Amino acid sequence: MAALAMIAGSACGQGSVGPDVIAGDITGPQRWGTVGGITGYSIGTESCNIGDEDLLWDDELGDGTPANLHPLMGQNIFRLKDGRFEQLGQSWLKHAFLALNLGGLCSNNCMPSSLGGSGLGPGCNDPYSAGLNGSQSGLGPKFEVNPTKGEYPWPFTGDGQSGNSIYKRIQVNNNDVNPSLNSGALYFGEGQYISPDDAAAGNDDNNASYRRITVGSLQSGGYNLSFTGATQRGKPALQAWQDFDPAVTLVFYDVPFDGRYIVGYKVTDNGDGTWHYEYAIQNLNSNRAAGSFSIPVGDGVTVSNVGFHDVDYHSGEPFDNTDWSATVASNSVTWNSPTTHAVDPNTNALRWGTVYNFRFDADSAPENVDTTLGMFKTSATNSFAIPGVGPAAIANCIADTNGDGILSPADFSAWVAAFNAMAPECDQNADGSCTPADFSAWVSNYNAGC
Image (cartoon, rainbow, N blue to C red; front, side, top):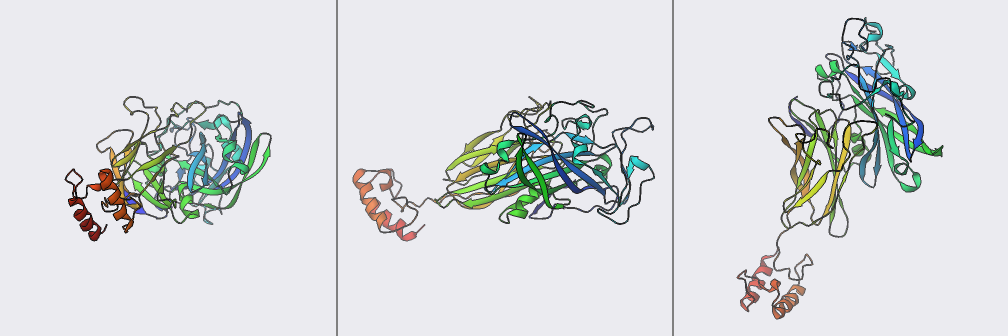
């Protein structure tokens, strides 16, 4: 892929050459049970092949072809609350096994595959219910999948294995959807396909779709969820942040020869002389993953309330869930994964199919900057500049002796007090001492303005 950055564009591409799978509809969700305050859910996905060639759907060895030539389906749940778009849970991956070649969902011109159930023809659709996508025996882990190429081993790890009611399914903490704890929150479900021939055709950036979720009653220890409104085809979950909050900016960035990231950000004036900077980054299909994120900070800026949010792996995935650390320097705020890929390949990185959040407050309004996204798996180029915003430098207004942010006669009284106290604010000519000459310097600085 060539590097691509575009501000506030649509995430939905319409492929026409080769196989091109999208999540044409998202159904369910289904609630399975609750363990320790965590409820397991699954989401149904109905695929559409909007390309002009068959999409392979092969999961058997008996026909003499590889069995790892079928789509995988990932399922995720998100929350938009108080201006923050966060991922609440993720599932293991449903391995597809039979394509029904139906018509009418995305096209009225279904051309059934000559391969029968081992292919999804152009214009055809195939439904997998929430119950089927939550069937534990057919769910495989994410760790052994290369999302950029759509590659994975066969048989997959955990094939045929089942467990308790939340095992391998979307796992959501009840407190994160409890209506009494989340006033005004909006919820979303996402379905995403990974398929080797779709990726090889270069049609893998429109494979995720989202749909809004409503929270219902508490039943048997978990909350019932239901979908409302239409499925937003080809729009990954982070697009919902901008769709429901026009103050959000999205930047789509394709790492060369790897995959796509979506960087979203919003800045809010706190009304007290500080601004809140909120970032969310979705790794759509990058195999290299991200291991760091840095935002420039202007001179003189004070940064506070630095935060981070990720989503847990579970059910035997080998990835660590330790939070990223944050470092505030004089010119940047930087978050890093707990360690490097060379030290621990399973440390917590921003891997495909997940959204991570980065946030802080600063006492300066935003300006356009280049943020830096660092790759987890190293290669020739290991960091990429992505357009964003960061706090601008604070001008050193030396005549503002009382530090209230404005020049007024009150600053003269403040200078006199500083002179009498031999305070640092007295030194207006920067000679390192407090003398009557600083009065003339203060007048000059005052007249020059800030």
